Every structure is written in structure tokens, then in C-alpha cells.
Image (cartoon, rainbow, N blue to C red; front, side, top):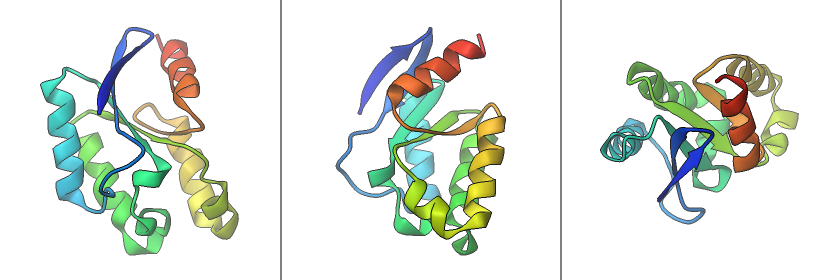
Length: 121
């Protein structure tokens, strides 16, 4: 993991490779890592999310993302989610609603995350 400064916001960026985020304990670990680095956001590549994250009926997305909301740490899912969005209208709606908010975003890359952070400043 590395810290990136994106438009004045410290973002903890997870590596592409590594164990998948597959539960609340993983979320809490990332939140703790972000706090240790004074990061207000965590960026997790699509490749690091357990496949069940993209199947809303499993409850994994809600469970994990609620921890970020609870601790007031922004979370960005970074990468192409079109494969899952095409398979699920519920996920498509979920992504759209998250992207309208200010704490959970689905972005194509770090450049898009930076643009979104800049726009809210």
C-alpha cells in the first residue's frame, strides 16, 4: 500500500495483488491502515475485492462499505466493474447511487478519483 496525495487528500492506495477484501475484518484493517497514515480515503482495485462483493444478494458489499461509512473514511472501488453491472440491474443502481454520494465511489482509475476529489473541494 502507498499513500498518494490527490488534490490535497491523502489516499491509501492498495496494491493490485494481495488478499481479497472479503469481510468486515478486512475493511477494519484498511480503515486502521488509513488512520495510521492520516488518509481520508482508501482506494481498492477491483482485483482485490472478493467476487461476492459484486453480488449484492450476498450482503458483502453492504457489510464492508458500512464500516467505511461508520468510520467516516472514503472508499473508492477502482477499475472496470462493467462486467458485473451488465449482469445485475441492482448492482448498476447501487453503483449509480454510491457515485452520487460523497463517501463511496466507483471510479475507473486514480485520475478519476483525483478529479472527483478536486470537484468537491
